[in-house]
Amino acid sequence: MEKRYLTRKQVAELFGVSPKWLANLSSQGRGPKYFKLGRKVLYRAEDVEAWIQKNATAVKTKS
Image (cartoon, rainbow, N blue to C red; front, side):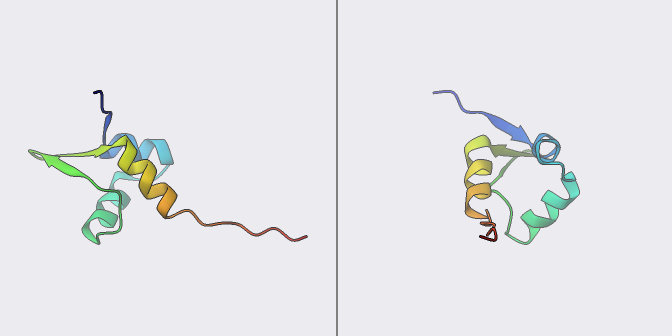
């Protein structure tokens, strides 16, 4: 079973945000699930995707 893990920097680059912003979300308990391996913060790709889906906002268009 192959799992993909991303560093905080990789997640930040993918979504055009800063690693510090992600760290702030994590400290508030609002970011994607993560775990620490020593001092390194890692995210599972599926946890990042789940977090995005959970926090998606529907945009209403005018008819």
